[in-house]
Structure formats: structure tokens, C-alpha cells
Length: 139
Image (cartoon, rainbow, N blue to C red; front, side, top):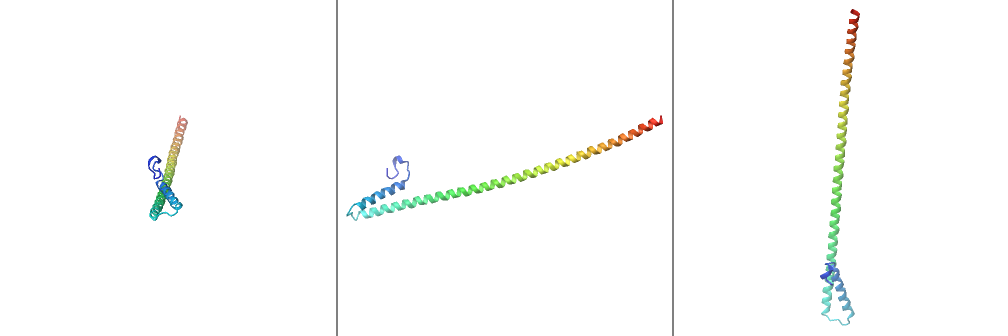
């Protein structure tokens, strides 16, 4: 199916054209005394083969460029994800430090309150003990 039609699924149309041109060139060179009318046909076939090669190279170049663009975009996105993860980690660390500071402050307040109440209780016990002692001595 030389030109990519039929059952080849459209694969390598240019390659089939190039192969066809080579066959024509081979036939032309093997014939001694080829007619002058055949030379323009062979030249046209060569030009078509060259155009097919150029087209294939252009497709290859565009595919490589597209692959480079995808790679670059992937790197950009990965960098942004990394920055976001670092920002979130920093915020989580700060939140944990703030929470720990709050726990320490609250603990100190509780400790001060309990110590103050204990001191008040101690003074109240002393006062009550002195009152009892006076009452016992007076009676």
C-alpha cells in the first residue's frame, strides 16, 4: 500500500513516498538511454521526497519543542508545590509554638492560683489554730 492508504493505519506516509521515489530512481538509473521526459518526473519525485523529509523534520522539531514545554511547566508546578508545602510547614510550626506558649502561660496561671490559695489556706489554718489555742487557754 505504498502511500499510507488502506490497511496500514496511515503510518509513515512520507516514508512510503520516499521508498517509491527510490524505486523510481533505481529504475531510471538502470535503464540505459532513458528518455528526456523521464528526467523531470524523477526530479519531481526527488523534490517530493525532500519535501516529505522536511515535513517529517518539522514535525519532529515541534514534538521536541512541545516536550520541552511540558517539562518546563512540570518543573514550575513542582516548584510552586514545594513552596506551598514549605509555607504550610512554617505555619504549622508557628501554630504549634503559639499553642505551646499558651499552654505554658495557662499552666503558670494555674500554678500561681493554686499556690495563692494554698498560702491563703495556710494563713487561715494558722489563724484558726491561734483562735483555738486562745479559747483553750481562756477556759
